[in-house]
Image 1 (cartoon, helix red, strand yellow):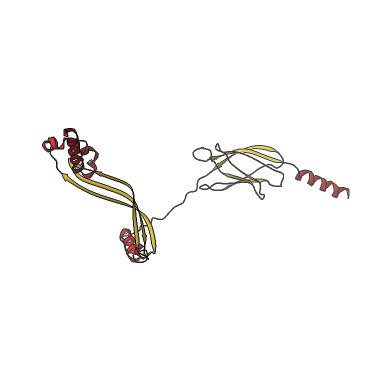
Image 2 (cartoon, rainbow, N blue to C red):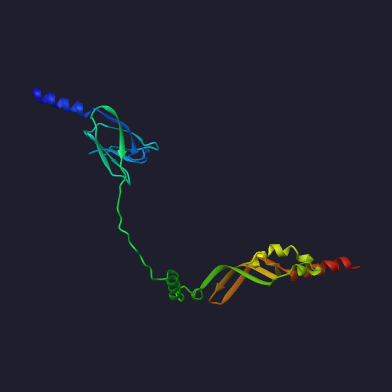
Length: 230
């Protein structure tokens, strides 16, 4: 009875002894710290994660004599430790090396053509004209321009009033070195509403802009009339 009681007390004291492990996890080849590695007392649920510098501290009162270290891209590793004491360890992880067979892929399908064909197949299904009612934002643009404007024409007295328009409307030409004369530009942004039955539609203009030599000429004529009137 005394022997059994002694063994029981010894096991109880041993089971209450705390094992503390402090250490660092590094890359075997580079020596760089491994951040985010999982360190676990094997056979228990006690674990920790290495910090930015690869350091960790882990303790347990459970019976475990080894650590298991795991991180994606590295081979997992087990190391033995001494139970019931505080100890320092440095753990080196080896990167996983995998050999992949080369694979040659040949795509004989034009993806753009496939997308267009699917859109055409569903054209009737998603036709907005079949809707009972809908609303949308609409943008309308009308532009008339003359390309290859020479410097002589640009310096004409008639075009002096619209000289600034050449720079602001240069986007009409793909060639930035080519002079473009915007005769007329009209832009409208509106909300469009439609109802099928009864058939009604309405367009509310949000913003509108009209610009060009015609507009400038009319404006110039009005100013001339204003200042020349008796």
